[in-house]
Length: 203
Length: 182
Image (tube, rainbow over the protein chains, first blue to last red):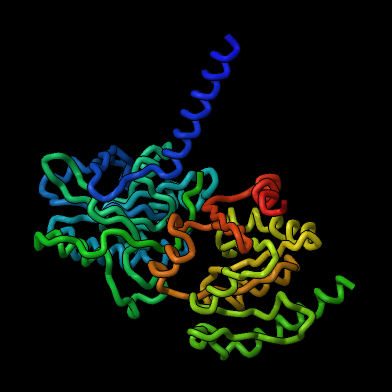
């Protein structure tokens, strides 16, 4: 009986540690189907990927108001939307932080920031923080490029916007643009994953 | 004595602010710049490295246990855990433990934020500034599993190396450190 109990505890421990491992290393890999969502936009309306009937895919950017890296990329995120929304790849920005921890990222602040910067893309609140863990976003800014297919929205690129957070004019490789261009041309994306420093998502 | 040191730090700091024309960021490439003012105020010799410069500092093969923490003044969880690294640095000094704080602050904030922060907190651990835009190269080079979020920490000696993309409490940090102390 005791052995049985011990065994049960061991199995439970193993399962739990396996679970915690999955949460830590979870999130999408290239080729996975990304979940849709229904999140509140700065205009008060709910937004889902499925609302964009004509889209060929999406540039999903986890970003926020308060992270210096996210701020450094704001204009470039806007530029991405300007360039690619009309080509079928709109930017969908999602603010993943807990606003109790970061009040500077609350809905009012998001509205103010979007207005000040003239964002033309949806800027959504991941209320309840249910979406970013499914994607596996760990920081802001963190980009997931999705391609719409019959099977769903397939993850095609994960990572940074480009290779220079400091100076947009000194960028050598525009990772996201190159990836979207490749999709638009039906080519294989050369660089599918990149890394960049960002601010931890606040839980 | 401590007060004296702080005072001298603040003076150094204000001196530095005066010659603001010296743009640290412009000169920061490939070689380290040492802003040496006085030898006894190690914290204020703000050394700025790119990855080639930092690499040997985080891969030492001496007999010490090295704790390397990647942080920035703008990173709230980093600032929160920073005192624990300071304490570890003090309390485990005689056990051959050395802490290195690698700041990822933006170069434009070195003088306005980072240096005043180091002075105000009177940081005793070695602090270096790390400025290298080619993040996609050096993040996986530092550790293959690092997504790029900070805080991040490496604990290593010449035999073993562990990487943590997380924040620590004092107890958690000590628990990890103790694996290296036997």
